[in-house]
Length: 71
Image (cartoon, rainbow, N blue to C red):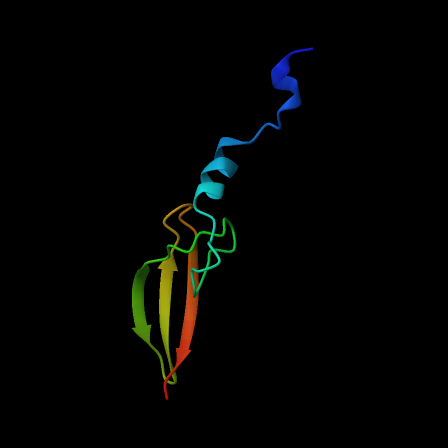
Protein backbone atom coordinates (compact mmCIF):
# COMPACT_ATOMS: atom_id res chain seq x y z
CA UNK A 1 0.00 0.00 0.00
CA UNK A 2 1.30 3.44 -0.93
CA UNK A 3 1.44 6.39 1.45
CA UNK A 4 -0.65 8.48 -0.98
CA UNK A 5 -3.61 6.11 -0.58
CA UNK A 6 -4.24 7.44 2.94
CA UNK A 7 -4.59 11.04 1.78
CA UNK A 8 -8.00 12.22 0.56
CA UNK A 9 -8.06 13.07 -3.11
CA UNK A 10 -9.47 16.44 -4.07
CA UNK A 11 -10.82 17.33 -7.48
CA UNK A 12 -8.89 20.33 -8.94
CA UNK A 13 -12.18 22.20 -9.46
CA UNK A 14 -13.12 21.74 -5.79
CA UNK A 15 -9.66 22.80 -4.66
CA UNK A 16 -10.00 26.01 -6.67
CA UNK A 17 -13.45 26.68 -5.20
CA UNK A 18 -12.16 26.02 -1.68
CA UNK A 19 -9.49 28.67 -2.19
CA UNK A 20 -12.26 31.22 -2.80
CA UNK A 21 -14.69 30.12 -0.06
CA UNK A 22 -16.68 32.86 1.61
CA UNK A 23 -14.97 33.94 4.80
CA UNK A 24 -17.17 34.62 7.81
CA UNK A 25 -16.25 38.30 7.81
CA UNK A 26 -17.35 38.71 4.17
CA UNK A 27 -20.84 40.25 4.34
CA UNK A 28 -23.28 40.23 1.47
CA UNK A 29 -24.01 37.90 -1.39
CA UNK A 30 -22.10 34.66 -2.05
CA UNK A 31 -22.16 32.33 -5.05
CA UNK A 32 -24.49 29.37 -4.48
CA UNK A 33 -22.33 27.07 -6.56
CA UNK A 34 -18.87 27.62 -5.10
CA UNK A 35 -19.36 29.93 -2.08
CA UNK A 36 -17.11 32.69 -3.43
CA UNK A 37 -17.99 36.21 -2.23
CA UNK A 38 -16.36 38.03 -5.17
CA UNK A 39 -19.40 38.89 -7.30
CA UNK A 40 -18.85 42.09 -9.27
CA UNK A 41 -21.89 43.63 -10.96
CA UNK A 42 -22.14 42.52 -14.59
CA UNK A 43 -24.96 44.92 -15.51
CA UNK A 44 -27.81 46.92 -13.95
CA UNK A 45 -31.31 47.66 -15.20
CA UNK A 46 -34.27 49.47 -13.70
CA UNK A 47 -37.73 48.02 -13.63
CA UNK A 48 -40.95 49.59 -12.37
CA UNK A 49 -40.46 49.09 -8.65
CA UNK A 50 -36.96 47.69 -8.32
CA UNK A 51 -33.37 47.75 -9.53
CA UNK A 52 -32.08 44.49 -11.00
CA UNK A 53 -28.37 43.72 -10.77
CA UNK A 54 -26.77 40.77 -12.51
CA UNK A 55 -23.58 39.66 -10.80
CA UNK A 56 -21.00 37.20 -12.11
CA UNK A 57 -18.87 35.00 -9.87
CA UNK A 58 -15.18 35.65 -10.34
CA UNK A 59 -14.34 32.04 -9.49
CA UNK A 60 -16.81 29.86 -11.45
CA UNK A 61 -18.51 32.36 -13.80
CA UNK A 62 -22.04 31.63 -12.63
CA UNK A 63 -24.41 34.60 -12.83
CA UNK A 64 -26.67 35.65 -9.98
CA UNK A 65 -29.59 38.09 -10.17
CA UNK A 66 -30.39 40.39 -7.24
CA UNK A 67 -33.41 42.68 -6.99
CA UNK A 68 -33.50 45.77 -4.80
CA UNK A 69 -36.71 47.57 -3.90
CA UNK A 70 -36.65 51.34 -4.26
CA UNK A 71 -37.59 53.23 -1.14
